[in-house]
Length: 143
Image (tube, rainbow, N blue to C red; front, side, top):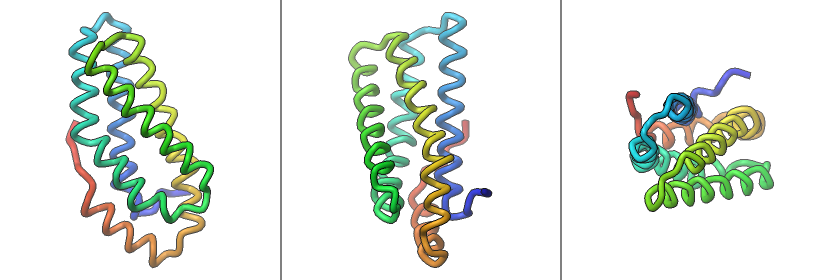
């Protein structure tokens, strides 16, 4: 199913998150500097991921009928936040890999399951309304 225009700003942020994970994983494989890579993740978290999680939890999730999936995704948001806090204190290759694995998996579930479910079950007028709110609130970052 094509992505509904109301969700495209979130999908763009997902793209950025996946790109961050790919770049981080490649850098780690070639001996990249762990503190520098950790700081890049922390910076991206502060610039874009906090915003993304807030929009999903405040605007989209309350309208979704797949409550078990929404609960799981919220738990993953908290786990990602916890990993960022650990990266602030003691960055390691293992934490970077764990963060990238979780974020990549999380994004794919949101795109393939949550967004598809939302597009099927949320009324068109409501999607249009939340689309405006998502668009207004979404931080846009150029990689």
